[in-house]
Amino acid sequence: MIDETKLIDAILESLPQPRRFTARGWHVFNCPACGDTRQRGGFLATQTGGFRYRCLNAGCRFEHVTGWEPDNLLMGRPRQFLDLLGMEDVADTADHHCALAPSTSTSSAAMTDGFFDCLGQAAAKAAVEGHYERAKEIFEAAEVVRQEMARGVSLRDALHTIRLQSGRN
Ligand SMILES: [Zn+2]
Image (cartoon, rainbow, N blue to C red; front, side, top):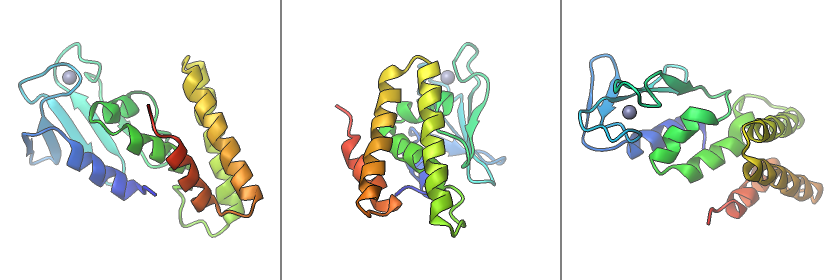
């Protein structure tokens, strides 16, 4: 499973080369979204386990800063950014993992409720944005998890099942 720290580490490993690190903590490189060749893309890992991304190239879809924090769903522009880095699978796993963010929770029932809430929200959001295939995928993933858990499989192991099934073609 991906946890938030591993997600940020995985992003840092996937950032385009060459890149440099600024005194203010930004990783700077050619923006993968706009054909930039002047290292105008900037990635910042936040103190709270999330990230920010922005591009100084006017007109780029990342001209206005985007970002993600551990309690958020990985949707929209933060997700597009990961897709541009070739991290679709990581983003998928993080989606499935999103409700597990409060990992200090000792109640597995609360975690399970949170997980289904989270998938429900992700599916609704995908549908609202017109990503019907994605919404269907999420509903199907939720159904698989439900069935696995009905057979006594733990949430964590059930998540592993949907990860294996969500391979893209
Ligand atoms: Zn750009």
